[in-house]
Length: 377
Image 1 (cartoon, rainbow, N blue to C red):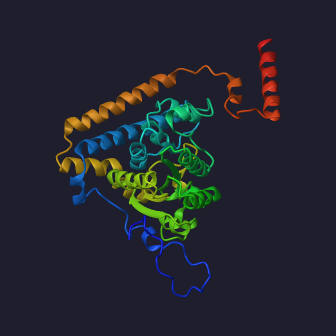
Image 2: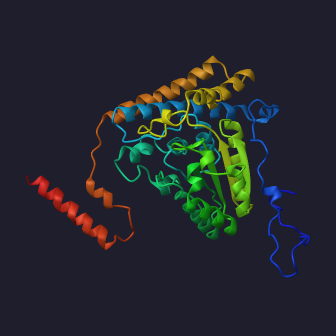
């Protein structure tokens, strides 16, 4: 029985005549007992070598992007930066499985996925610099703004996907969320709506073990977060989040299932953030250095490079080319962030509502008066 064929055909024993019997057989919806892995298995040989090399290059460039953004934060050029160092495989896979017409709904830690969608690397950081509500056009890039409130992007993804289907647009929405966000009501409401509406949406939970300082064991007693899918009537998948090929495979399957009418999927990727939650966080207060060291041995770049070299798909020249591309991006970030942007405070009131509220109009007038008075001094 496949995921798409999970409704019982025979009467369910023990249910009284006329009573509401279970509408879904849960067995096909359950995630695998162990996370899906490709690296280190014979399955790797089936993949396109060009795809594998591209995924590796994106990992290397993404790591350097995270490092440079973190440095810019320490220099005061970014207000805050939630690094995805250690989670690059999830970010890269999420960006590369989507078609140009699909939509990405990122959280605040997903700037790398946003860049992977083709958004300019500097524009992706505009919000975190504190310069604007968002630095790119969501409609043009098919990428929602970075979402700082936890999990509120998940019902947005469902609503857009459902509306698109009603309009005959065969797009898929992919919503990214952290393990901490799964404790929010918005997440559960989104899953329920998605399953009931059979919406073409995929949820990717990047389980990095901590909601800031709170470990997963203090958030959920479920066998895995992927098991939560069954309660809503959708498929759950569990994948090694540091195996970029496995994440790409599982997400690609989920996206295709959604696009062809198979409904939503909840994917849990087991990963780890090697850096602190943000530059304002002291991770040493809640986790041991031994834990971090152990996860460094499962670094997504290290895993991928070992496998590609062993398979003869990557040599020193190829690795050097990826590093060169990463350094070129870092140099551009340093150069362009050196200049102070010219900002218009009145732009704060643009693109908030299609029709501004009376309160917003009042605030706009107040700020305009203050700016005029300051200019007359």
